[in-house]
Amino acid sequence: MAETHGLMERLEKAVTRLESLFSDSPRSGGMEYDGIAPYVEAFDRLLNGSVAEFLRYSKILEGDVKTHNEVAVLLKPISEKIQEIQNFRERNRGSKMFNHLSAVSESIPALGWITVSPKPGPYVKEMNDAATFYTNRVLKDYKNSDTRHVDWVKSYLNIWSELQAYIKEHHTTGLTWSKTGPVASSMSMRSVLTSGSGLSPPPPPPPPPGPPPIFDTETAKDEGTASRSALFAQLNQGEAITKGLRHVSDDQKTHKNPNLRAQGPPVRSPTKSHTPSPTSPKNSPQQNHPPVLELEGKKWRVEYQEDKNDLVINNTELKQVAYIFKCNKSTLQIKGKINSITIDNCKKFGLVFDNVVGIVEVINSRDIQIQVMGKVPTISINKTEGCHIYLSEESLDCEIVSAKSSEMNILIPQDGDYKEFPVPEQFKTAWDGSKLVTEPAEIVG
Image (cartoon, rainbow, N blue to C red):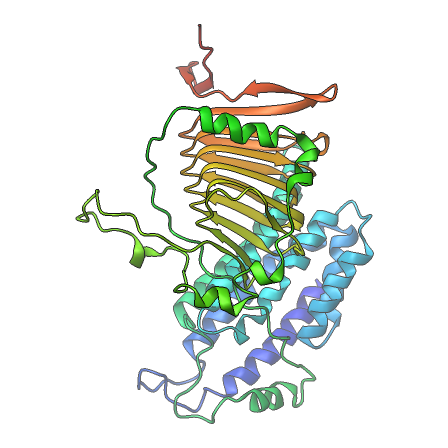
């Protein structure tokens, strides 16, 4: 346990220096306290609990996971530790524990939460979500063969969950400083942390993405299936669909061309403040919104597109997400590799994408067609009527999760064409004497 002891000593030194800023000053509520501040005590409990447990399970697993952890213990500055952990993952792509290393590498920037304001908690959750993608793979590989890996996953995710709870209780809007002590500027913070201990603050993390839109859950019934058939015919071209797409130049994007933004008021993703109240009349006139296709932080916003069958997003990055909201009779192609895609409140909409490392979600929509050109691990369909998914050879291991949806079909490539398989919509459940057993119900025509 020498590694654990070494890490605890270094972390205790850092906490002691932070504590020195508070120990002689009143708390923010105007009340005096003696000894260690409550938020420092809470942080100590986090270190002695979840962190210590995770280190113990890392040692049990041995191999690259143990070495990966020892590297973090030996390095002094937090920023260097973060970089070294990420470099270690890149140098060991052939490791049988690559998913373990990736879970830590993708989420370790959460240690920079102290530089995030006003909402460090959601930033930690974002990093936790990045880890979950890889820990789910670990669970899938080992849940039925080696419970040590399951324990490792639980212990690691517990760190970020408890850190979120700690931040919510003590530092909801950012790291809390004494109101009567010295001003905590970036230079003074650096001098406090670096004097005597050799520690330097971690690099500022990227800003957390904006909150996803809160969507209206009601969708109106529309006319027949003629329009849907026309839309599906476009996507049935397979790879040839990209020939009909045109590149959207910078002067046509709202975030690149100020003149386009000047033509209408800025449109934000719907929030609770824009959601009609229960007392709002149902027959109120629908507002007209200008179409949006722009990159906002790490989120691509595609909203209110009508009769546009040549929309393209390129120059994508792995950590970017796409939110597609209230687009009708349109088709979008997303090139490259992206983290996740959400389609909400769309009708007669077609999506073609290369690769998604997280999940593609379809919710509250109607007549949706999706074509996967590369890989995607999971596609979720919720409260949707009519959804056709064309899988590629590479994506045949994709998991389809559905709820409260109908007219769902998965199309599998076979002999140069696609064979259609319907997704069950009805299920039967029976008691087998010890538990409930649910299975798809066959519909007799």
